[in-house]
Image 1 (cartoon, helix red, strand yellow):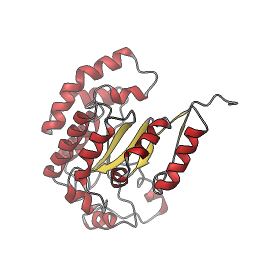
Image 2 (cartoon, one colour):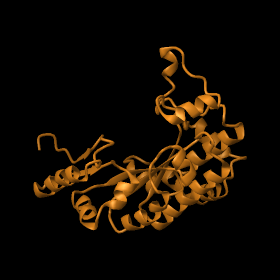
Image 3 (cartoon, helix red, strand yellow):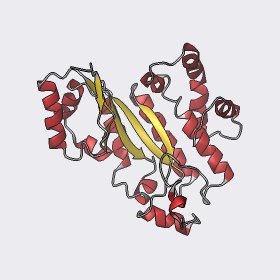
Image 4 (cartoon, helix red, strand yellow):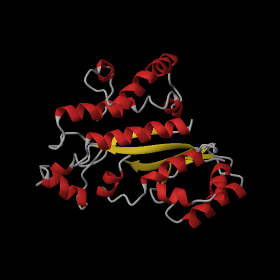
Length: 257
């Protein structure tokens, strides 16, 4: 009331870990008529699949704007390597269910994982396209894998040639914010492919990804709409060898990986 707050973000990866607790919080927001929007609800795919229509309706009535759903890969084999603990086949029916609600699902994927093949990437891109086709509100995010210490994937990465840091300062790149693709298991061609996918996935959902920003110029919006069919074709066919648009974007300040 004092500051005119209109919305909040739950910075909590585990907000939905206890569905009963999350339900009570959202129900309290509705009953007390907070009249604010909230977003970035991080939720696991398997947990989302288990929620009934009453829970999803409560989320909508509490003015939920967006959900972040980590699928990571369209390949069940890669999901198993990551110990994700989810059934990738649940993604399509869950997404179709969410289509009737106003929440915007943002599906998050990872690439550059050890032992990931071109066939695995093709499964991922196929799932990405299916998700945005089935749900007009769905958006995508694709990031590069980070080898975190203490995980099985870190040990796999070390065995595949990743230099293990020996000094404290050498751990700086091992974070989401400082990620890179200088992994020994990635060829220059694979790195270029992953750069293309990350760049084009911003445009594949159309202009929906841009609507989260308040000050997008009409020119940028127009360019995004014009580039949409090109981005979709690139993602669909894994076309990455000639990317002048990425060079232009980097010249204009796009950082990518």
